[in-house]
Length: 239
Image (cartoon, rainbow, N blue to C red; front, side):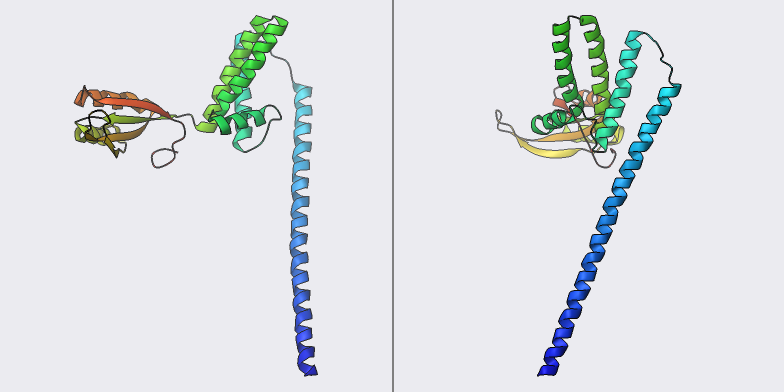
């Protein structure tokens, strides 16, 4: 009937109107968000530029021993690079190459910086023949790479201890009670002996490794164990 067609037409037009208003509202909010982000970035850029100009006015050069400048300059540079990369920012240098090495070759950020900057320093020393400045630069780059790894990976590196012993119960008990670290039992099978045995896995901090090694040798001098670096440990008792 004509009346029913008219009602359905009105409902359709009302739905389309509400949808368009809803879309315009979201687009408006998105546009405002982009404007806010751009304004925030512009204000941050103006503030940083002003801060640099203020420092330039009051800055007085300080002269120290060259080695002190190399060490502490490298520490400050590493702290700046590490904090920038920690939040996903870029310093505008070789960050892309460093991240590529880190992703594809499983090399830490600091070590990647050390490799690339070290190659640049060696090439410059060969071209210009100034080996003394190259050595000071190498010190700066080395300190900087260590600070970058400390910031990105943590200052308290941990290690993983794998133990194969016939006295696994006593070793496990001592680790949990004296070192207060958990132990995971991994079932294993000896390829040469054909014996079934268990591997004890324990994650501990660097300052606890000496205690773990000591109690293992105390309970079983013939125990076979090895220790490997654990770059980033996340969980209870760690970060």
